[in-house]
Image (tube, rainbow, N blue to C red):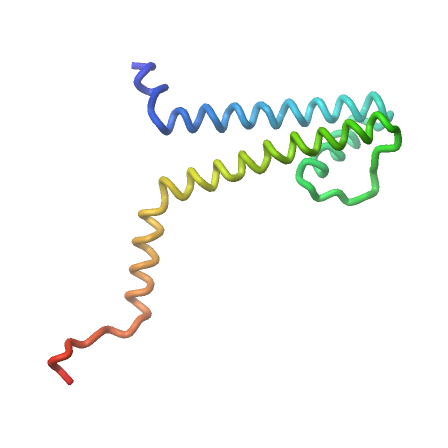
Length: 124
């Protein structure tokens, strides 16, 4: 019974989302630990910098100061942003795949409601 559940397309999608979430969590912990130990920032500041960096927001009040942390940040951002964008695109793909028929029905109902009714050609 568990094998049938685990081999369904939705369960493989759940496994993929779980793996992506774990990878992103590991990246956050790794970045937090690295900046805490190399830059000497507090844990909260290190976590904050890791999260704003991976979200590509970057406010600028914290920045790497050593050569090692600058090099780490370059690779950290390449890898981290790639995983975040992949997770986001997977989530959007899931939403579109499983919810597209519902969305199409709602849009068609809305369009039919607001568009003028077509009269048969014989009535002209």
